[in-house]
Amino acid sequence: MTTAQRTRLRVSICTLTFRRAEDLRRALPMLVEQARSVAHDVEVLVIDNDTAASAVDVVLEDGSGLVRYVHEPRPGIAAARNRALAETLGRDLVVFIDDDERPVQDWLAQLLATYLRTRPAGVVGPVVSEFDEAPEPWIVDGQFFTRLRHPTGTRVAVAATNNLLLDRAFLARHGLTFDERFGLSGGSDSLLTRRLTQAGGVLVWCDEAGVVDVVPAARATRSWVMRRAFRMGNTATRVELEVAARPAGRAAGRVRMATRGAVRIAGGAARAAVGAVTVSRGRRARGWRTVARGAGMLAGTTGYVYHEYRRA
Image (cartoon, rainbow, N blue to C red; front, side, top):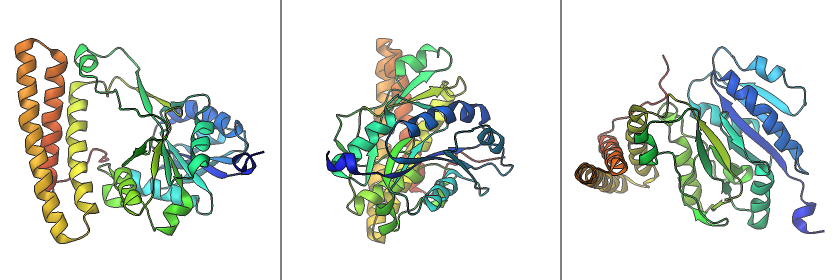
């Protein structure tokens, strides 16, 4: 028997939810199945970020004994993520997955196997999008929901929490939490993982540990893609400025990100123009998305914050 086989890990699968009862109802049985599929101490932790605690009834429907419910009324995804960290202090690993995602059959087993090989600070898995309804050709040709993938074991510099395993002790040793100033804008996961690698932590890719993201029709639109691109550019600049060690570094970062933003605007516009001339819908679409991302980056250098997740 190998050392990896003898190791029994304490693992928390964490899913954050906000007024998505049906998504959570579909997700919980799959997460419970994942918890039961491995020879480790695994719980499923639901963090309900609705002030009305709307997810509690869904959790009460579960009879597995493996699901734990926690209500975090403070608004914002960063607050919910931090509550997950607080609730898992003393556990070995915390694994984040979105409440509207479906893990592949051996998702958790693959994440844990990759972790046990080298014990990195984090393991990142791929997210594959499927559409709830057939999207318009602009979305299909733009390939906006196709993400980069890597061979298993590849080191990556940054990650989102839509499919992410983190070593809980590493986070505790380095005092790493999610920055709640990013709670309504998004990007707190990017910032945390950037700080993790700055602290000497390693993030590795596990290509076998995939999850499927079901894209609703409301997100498969031009307006949503453009807003998301602007927000991603905006938070990219803000994260870059936050990880700068000194004021001089932040000033240099502001110039660097402004330059990158301007280059994206110019390059994206040129790409869109070429697409118009060559009648390439995909090139036009990707060009305009690049313009939106560049505009978001420029806006971030002025201190502007785009709150994509602002609540009424």
